[in-house]
Image 1 (spheres, rainbow, N blue to C red):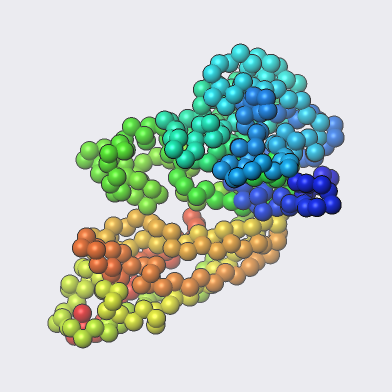
Image 2: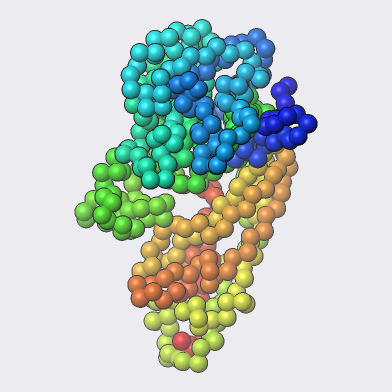
Length: 408
């Protein structure tokens, strides 16, 4: 078994664990809840990458972007994989921009020989960085062709590793049955190669979630930089911006991420009806306006409104893992506030296989369930609020004020 740390200076000086990186690698696709490969000294692992000398994907600014100085050492994906198994390697492209396909034939040839293929593709600071924007969401140059051709030629399972800071439209790979796993490694740091290999060979069970929506390439033509509107406008074909307001297809949604195990969430305890009291001295004689507009945050006692929810997270798979429970909320649509889901809280918990852990989340209605109206006033809408604990657990909570004479 390989070492789990990377020496970045003289061995007696310092060693950096790879675990913090590998636990946050985002797997985007697996054909089954098992690692794509198993450690072995016999099978050959084929690694393809758009590379130059040194590798454009495996060079220091890809693993350590924007960080002053150069580390004493860093582990590339190829080096990490080589710690587990024998490898054969071919530079698919001459650079990250991959201007031609002249080396693809050699890459296909070794893919036919190897028992498994790992394709390392993506971007670098030559493509994206501060003051240098990309002009598209697709893989640069001929990289997509490289992936498709090598995957078609491979005799064994194929894992696609993506290096980038921003999203990439990899719909073609997502829909390719020959590609059994897609891993987004971001720019993974100096122990990144070790972390990537640990995930591929199942030494680490990843638990990362995407921090942004991955849009298709067609999205760019619908959101001109001269229009910063957030909400979708179907009348003019405008799809909206960010996970909250975007109405359209995604490559992968915000918060997406897979694991080698499966988790089941159940709500152990949570309120279903909450009275929102008034503290303002002004009054209205009926609650019609309150129900439609919501209560001003400044007109209620926010300190008395903390809501506690207890969620049980059970690991029903065969591998220990870390689960990130993301809590989204949406407001009543009747008030005109919009019913878009928004992330209001999240908690991470490690659960051993077959065990169950409890998570407690405290919600403050004034902060987490309030919205800002068109006049810039923050209000807590009355009515039924929907809470989404991840994708499979939903809960409804009714916020109300039942007094006959309401202070407003």
